[in-house]
Length: 253
Image (cartoon, rainbow, N blue to C red; front, side, top):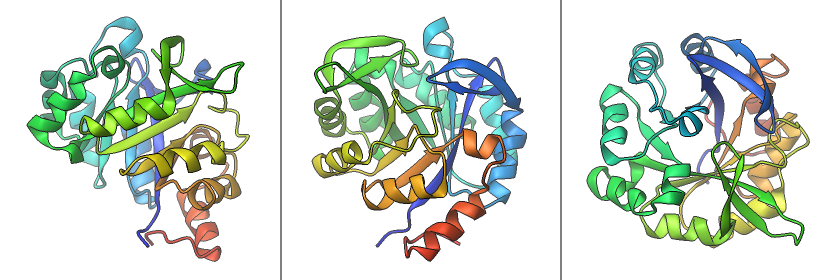
């Protein structure tokens, strides 16, 4: 069995790492480059940097920050936010990012996934999907930091289309659980992982090592992404990996 990955996520706004609940009430938690270097030293397998205001404000992710991260961090990292064209993706990859993630722009223009994948390879593109459960129990896709519903686009159908178009990974965030530390919706991840053929990164709801263990085992996710529990010092990456190892969930030492 492949080792499961532990991925700290750094939401970036105006050059600073921020964290909130359901993408609201955002608080400054530190410099993204310094935090990333600290997480790499602590044993993180990868990092994800998301410029959470880029899609709303119409800005591209700053390549200068990516260059600084590449200079300091010795593990793979993914960057997203404001990527609207293949040229935007190229600028970030050229600046040192290992992968790019697209979300709102891909919903508006699904061909963007195909274009990036065909030009650079599926291994370089992660499609991030934010979704909420509606009154009827369906998981419906949202965009622009979870603030807008993407019409009648449903999570599982969109994930399958993204993979068909060339996505190398799916990063799914439950907007109902983001920042709540109430655990991941493992049943949803189990269904999602069973419906597509690429790795799934779980995001939204990590409150304890047990939550992460659950989504990796019961939910079947290939990786767990978390933010608040790391940013506020509740747990370290090492704490998580030691807990998982005791449960015989494979992780990189």
